[in-house]
Image (cartoon, rainbow, N blue to C red; front, side, top):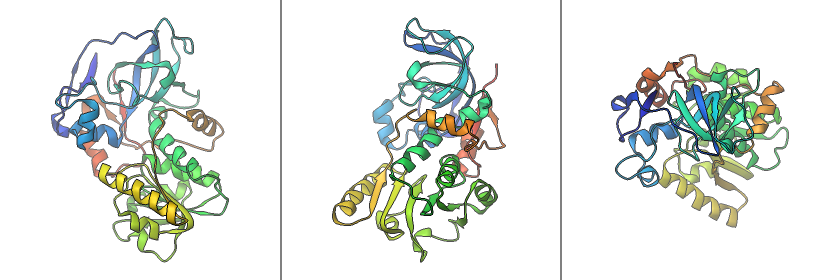
Length: 324
């Protein structure tokens, strides 16, 4: 089968695509014919072996997993003997980051608990775009507690994967939304529900006179003191990504801020696939729609897709079509 071959950590344009055997499912696994996958920042970081903690987790000198790919969407074609939740032919999707990864291949195996059935009206492209980004957005918003209608939220990175889900979920809860991203993404952000838009290249949102009840950050770059300054009394900041040293600093300063003040800083610890049923229900009710970038790449264009992701020009999620 055709697959990304994760034989070594490498720059984007040295990644390998080649043949390897179709895997056999274990007792608690299904074999998936992969139709689509999507890219996440974690895929890009792990490909390059950055930050160093990824090498500690996935192999100091050589990766322990055979191919990258967290978000998978495909069709069940074989079942392990202990599998009871799916049948051959079921369309399934999920986040494979708690297991063996491997979505960037024509076939992959996954444990049943990593998968959900794809709604009938959802395409494979939309399904692949959903699991990790949607759940980072949802779990971030749930971490704020009760979301009171009319309160203000700022979403940083609002035009990307996590951000486009977060806008829709925040709008469904009646929040007043300020979105931060590049100007080229403003039209999309407004169409999804942003009331105010900011180009981060022209303005630092933490320097504005107005402050926010909630801030959801797709990727942190600033210091904790900046985020605290942008929060109202009793405000909460939550981040879904950033460098490990910065995230540790945010977590520590957040502990200090909540101990000695009314503001909170949180780091979202993703729980893969938890509450994906909420996302599915919101999609089926017409309240939530995955945003798939118009530039859909094939597996043989994987290096170009990673380069596109890294440049940050994409709208929503970057999806990979897997050929058969």
